[in-house]
Amino acid sequence: MKIIPISKLLPGMFVQSVTKQTGRIKIKNQGWVKTQAGIDKLKNAGILEVEIDPDKTLTDSVPEKEPTQTSTIIKKRDPWQKVHSSEQEMGKAKKLYDEAKTLQIKAFKDIKAGRDIDIAPFRELASGFMDSVFRNQDALACLTQMRQKDAYLLEHSINVSILMGIFAKHLGVDKDLIVELTTGALLHDIGKIKTPDEVLNKPGRLTEAEFEIMKLHALYSKQILEESGLTGVAVDIAGMHHERLDGKGYPFGKKGDEISLYVRMASIVDVYDALTAERVYKAGMEPIKAFKILKDGCPDSFDGELLTKFIQCIGIHPVGTLVRLSSQKVGLVTESNPATPLKPTVKTFYSAKHGRYTEVQDIDLSNKKRLTR
Image 1: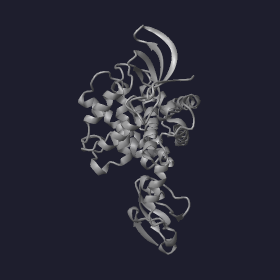
Image 2: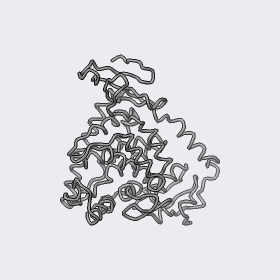
Image 3: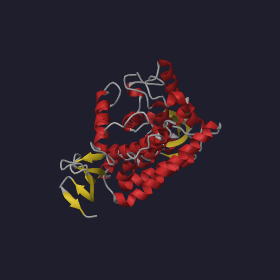
Image 4: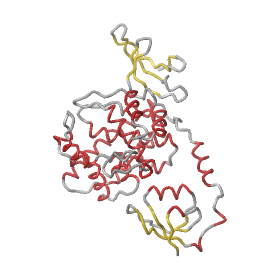
């Protein structure tokens, strides 16, 4: 037997056990690691060292160009492919969104009662989110824009989870890993249940002392998830989504390469949703203004390359936002258009010019075509 760092693990090697990790992953069955994607999953789960049996290495079965094969698979998946129409998917998406709210409320009650939260339903819900996103991401994306001013804590985590899943899909991340990312995003602010209400819901600027109290929520989130048996990248997202590339974030002050790709993604999505959210004490910011603030935070706080990809993924006019056309018609963006991001499909229902509601029309701005209903 031989113990090696995860960086030395290659496809075809036989893994006997995990010897060092940041989480608490248990390998139920010994066996061969057949692909680079499988190794990446172990890395993302926090595995640092493994024990291998060199005598069982399958040298002949290891593809010589595994990364090329993996990248080819990723390229074949069109992130914009839609299996269902938005109308077909909306009912399923709405049910998932409502289930997420119910699940969050139960988790808050469990924590207040001193009980560990049950992670399994959150993973199942995250998987449901991803099934919906892969059928047609526009349905859930639209729901992230339908906000209630007094439900920020509930809706923010759900929205971050959905947007994180859409973002990861856009980047070609493996679907199983996306479920882990969305699970972590669903629970990333769970520690705020331990933050005093007078600090959490304060409408004005926090004092220095209050901000120190607020910053503890990230540590609380990490602690709650670890005590509930969650490990790996999901816990990293919960505990480190406020870290910044220049080291001025919290709670650990990590910087640069110490912050993983997935945590960098989560930090962008978290701030974007917070800026665009409706709150009791402030109106939500227009997406384009939120994008500018995020752009101003590059490269000190946020990864500029990732931010550009996020904007391409969400669109300048995200699904679910209200827009006014040059004709003075007002409508809701219902479908994204990756070929021409500035020209999505809009459902118009009001004339700003005449000050009255109009016949509902679906208009594809990319060809100015009125769609049949």
